[in-house]
Image 1 (cartoon, rainbow, N blue to C red):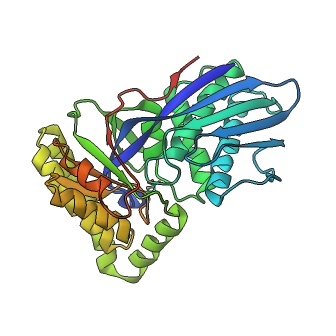
Image 2: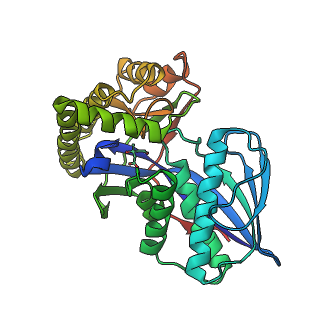
Length: 329
Ligand code: MEV
């Protein structure tokens, strides 16, 4: 039996714009997905998903990446998560040269599904690492990140950046621009607070919406470019440990994301609740449409205010996780 875990992440700056070649900065947080893998005697896969902020359920199926799951999966989100697991197992089997290896998997996660905290990347990365090790191969981090990106890219119809999968693999803070991914080593410890509205956005639809706006309006394309400018200033503020400037730029980034249509009433309500409680800045994180915001606040104020904000289901402090994927057994 082999167990691996990988962290979720949030975007400090640059989601959506990163899809068009602008830079983005993300950081891994101390909430993880954990995958347990055990070799079977046959060629079947059995996946048991637990604690995916949904009722536990078991899926059993056989075969490879494109097989239909002829089971009752409770929601489209969980069905999507199973697609990621299936793709990740295919990558591990390919890496190990064992295309027909049967496996039992247990997937557990502390990261809400589809809510902007890279739950899918964490599940993919942990699955590839655990399944490959169970099949006798220790993959280097670059290969795990690359294979995980291929899975996300495939499932999301080519509309994924490398940020989530790279960050979940290497941990810490990362900078991504196109295919260039690097770790930012001198990141300050930021006082991050996450607000979660209990919902999720449809990443594919949201990315397609931004694409359509960019094609229709020059000023929408300029807005995406302006997000890139905010990211570059944000990188400077991070290097100078200028937390107040980081907060101001997060506010700016949220305004630009709103302008391209990816915020929502509940995300805006949480952003404003955090700001009114004197957070240094607040923005949505991830694809938007629902899910999570991230605020910067050294005091308990924003977290308390979020807890009393209608539409906010949970508010918690998020620590930077400097570990990426790791063996748990
Ligand atoms: C989704 O987590 C963030 C997007 O920028 C897409 C991506 O980077 O893959 C919308």
